Length: 202
Image (cartoon, rainbow, N blue to C red; front, side, top):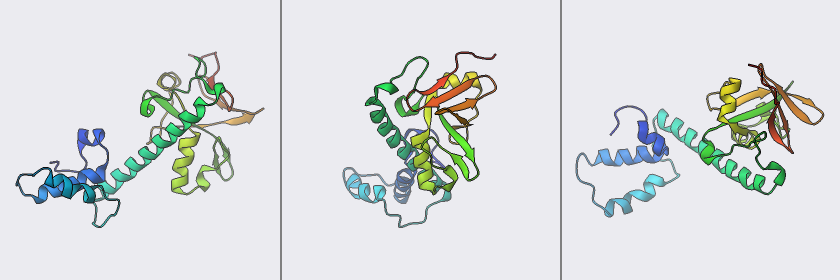
């Protein structure tokens, strides 16, 4: 059993921190006695997976659960987006307009284009990020981010925030969101998605 905070590699494979921690508590309570199956399975399953919190949890468990729930929520929103995009022929991928939605967002970079306003950062759907409550902020980011190939991030030297997203300030011009970077210009429209200008500055 781990002596410190978190579960290392096991925590990356199965990130439900609360379930891992509750299981650890029950194993430690045995003090070396054997676990008997299926009795243990029947007795442990419900309390370990219960959504009710009836005991004090370490701060790292609480933080781990917040990260797990945010990631789970984002995956659900992405799955919903993929179904929605599949119904719109204009959203099909091409070499110059690639959504890059892969399994769990692997090998892609999530871009969040916004327009800076007096009240905060206005997202693609018109909502202002800073004016939303925390839960709605996570929902808004999941719905408004545009996933592009990881190669874009390398070539354009995009900097990610602590959650791996790239925030890009943009301007509006004739229905397009234009993002001027040092090495290239990106453009976003609802019809074509995120595109790069052909010209690339080395």
